Length: 104
Image 1 (cartoon, rainbow, N blue to C red):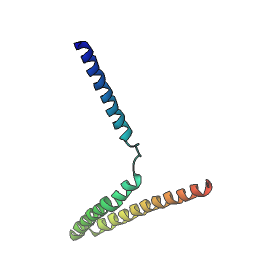
Image 2: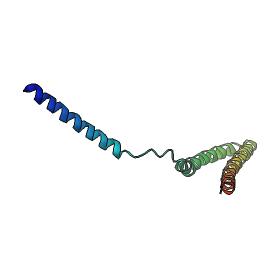
Image 3: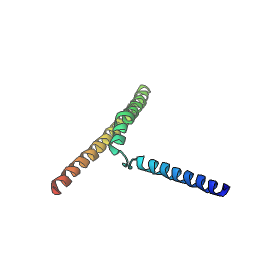
Image 4: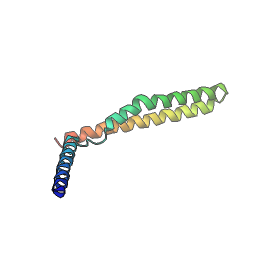
């Protein structure tokens, strides 16, 4: 009699565990991937202004020491770097437009 009760209890526990596992698996949403627009937006809104502020403080510190030529050189390099970044972003949008135009 004890063996039958033990098997019955084990069987009911197993089926309840299986039901719980099915509920967990059914409720889990499908992975959506990485939100690249959110990542780019975060860097553009949070990280870039902080880096530009740090560069500004460095430039002001150098200018106050009389190193105007180094400040002008660093500023020109920073402006060229920003132009390259803007150009890359523009090429990304132009490429996206061309792909949409070709495969419509």
